[in-house]
Structures are given as C-alpha cells and as structure tokens.
Amino acid sequence: MGVYFWIAIPVDVFFQHCSETMKKHGVGAYVEMMSGTLGKRNYVKYSEENAAYFVDCFSSPDYHSFFFSSYPFSENLGSREFGLFFNSPVADHSIVGSGGCETEKTRETIHLRQIMKQPDKSIKAFYAALQRSLKKIPDLKESTISGQKKQYYLSTSKTIIPQNAHSRLIKVPWEEHCLHLGIIIKQE
Image (cartoon, rainbow, N blue to C red; front, side):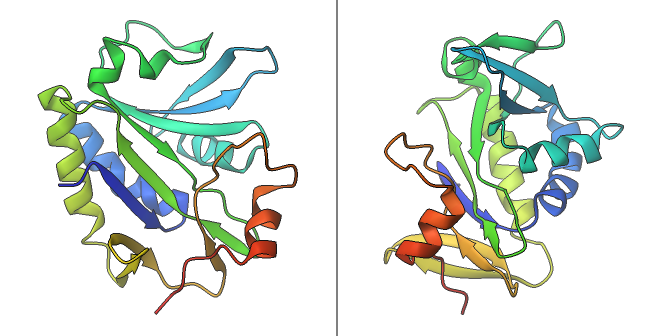
C-alpha cells in the first residue's frame, strides 16, 4: 500500500467507512483545530457518540488537519502544543490527514500520509486495511493526477479541489484560490 492516499468523498462517508477499521486495529482519529493561541492546537477525538460533531469540525474556520493514531494516549488530548503527532514516539504510530472541507461549490480532496518511513506495525497494518476498505466503496472511481498519482472519488456535481496547502503566501480562501487559478481535479 502507498505512503500517500487521495480520496474525494464527503467526510461523513469517509469516517463511516473508517470506523470499523479503526475499531478492528485499535486506532483513534483526532481532528486538529487552531486554538487562537500561537503554537497551540485543540484536538477532538472521534467516537460514534460524537461523530456528527467531529465531522462538523471540518467545516469550521479553525480546522487544520486530522490524524489517525495507534499511540496509547492516557488522557483526552484537549489543548496541546503544535507538532504532537509529528514527534516521537507518537509519529511512529500516526497517519496525518488533510482536506475534507466541502461547500456548495466544491469538495476538497482528503489526503492521507504516513508520517514515518518505518512506522509502527500496528499503524502500518491499519493504513493498508483502511486503503483496501475505502477502495471498496460502491461507485468509487479512480483517476490519475500529474500522470502518476492515483486519486479516488465519488462523482459529484461539485468541483473537486486539492487539499488545502495552508500556505501563508495564499491570502484568499483556499476554495477561491483554486477556482480562480483552475486548480481542480477532473472527474472522468
């Protein structure tokens, strides 16, 4: 299975398909929100009880990214320093995700990336199983981006755009930036 994975589907459908694989592999999902305090992030953990709230976080202007992790956190993460999932030992157990925002006009691609080249075997097994599971979604289509990268998507009347780059150089909203420059993913 690949280190990178791109899929353009509604985020609620994405996590419906992730939840069973997460349970089977003992993996948690965490959405990262900007806290307003420099260098701090707020984390919301996914559960079946808060699934709607978790998915709503992707529409918040404070949404930044999300993570899957098999790391055995002993407490609710709440507010933490930025970089929690990118530092050892947590990074060895984590997958970073970005994208997933959706508006009336666009659907942002969800991008998953294995953080470490040699991850812990539990997160590696989860990531492979998750990719296999997502590829089985009915009516899922495959396209090639930049001649070599595979992307999966569900057909939509919306324009599919890449995941947000979170670049400080981009001064307008991401959706506006992509539509203005024609940075879109073609549906076949």
